[in-house]
Image 1 (cartoon, rainbow, N blue to C red):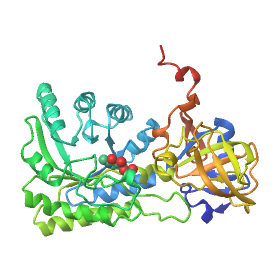
Image 2: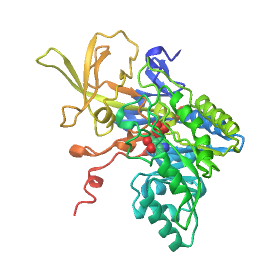
Image 3: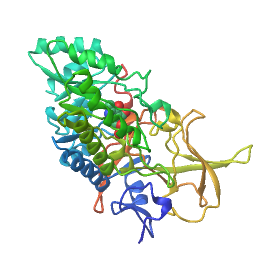
Image 4: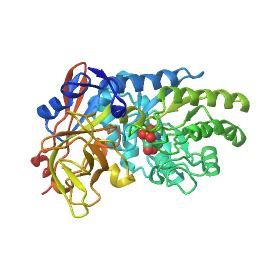
Length: 430
Ligand SMILES: Cc1ncc(COP(=O)(O)O)c(C=O)c1O
């Protein structure tokens, strides 16, 4: 066995190349494809644990304590949630469904942080029923509805107010959320006014920001965190809790940056503590909401090559048995991936190929211009860095059914999501 060469950098920790090709968590990917079928989501437990653990310990070291709430939107498979719960994480939930997932996975209500820019009454009621620790209010109308529901339930709910501070980050415009004009949160002035004048039934504890996702250059995330204490002091609003969201990016291709999530969390904690000292404020409880930086690098998607053809312009398509049904990010953001052949990932390429998904959309292309060693029908293709916003965004366009998922650890693989059956596809149709 050789240690992971540079071509395999976006693959999870502990990935090795041996005689059977790539192994993750001690299990060859070709064995997983044979035993569980494709398309298949594979999650590496040790990568999940290491990344979650480093964030939890960095935020817990904050002077007044802190916690990490895992963003379920990035990955909400129950077995993964149970594992992250064991690592000491809380849960960031953006719907009644995500609240149900967190509760089923064992998260206590107090560890839930509830999000959403358009929470329905059902979402808010689910938060109340789960005894959620914090609801992050996204606007005045929502505060009015939540206040009424809490009074009816005889409860006082702790809330944060989400503000869009007008700080831009270098990411795709479809995943930037903290700029002026964002649909998320309110202006800083409106946030301060809301915290001064919350409806009865709500107790304002502080502020929330989340500037965007897949941020590879994290300086603006730290700068925004540094700005908040003086803002709270100047506006005379409570800052017992400060939630600075998630957003740290990950490496999707070998040449991309790979920021360290534990170090980034430490940098946030230090910046907030310094800013509080400068502002003459006590350091609040700090919450971070990582999603992608935990789940993304832990996941790999496996496909089987279905066919090859060279077309009119001379390019060669390699068609696989999955696509936009299991990976929506290419269509949504033009995301770029670095697929390899699982059995011979580092063999010298013979040419450049286009990887076609099987859905009836011309945009269903998982990667374009990939150098591969003689792909053939039946080969297993592995796409790394697909742990975040893949399984949670999967859909059943063309009625293919959603993929299965396995968790690998210490040489064993456990099925954690069954493949969707035809009966399940039609279960809701009357
Ligand atoms: C409020 C909030 N918190 C946390 C996250 C997680 O972000 P990421 O997966 O980039 O860490 C998101 C993602 O959009 C979010 O909207």
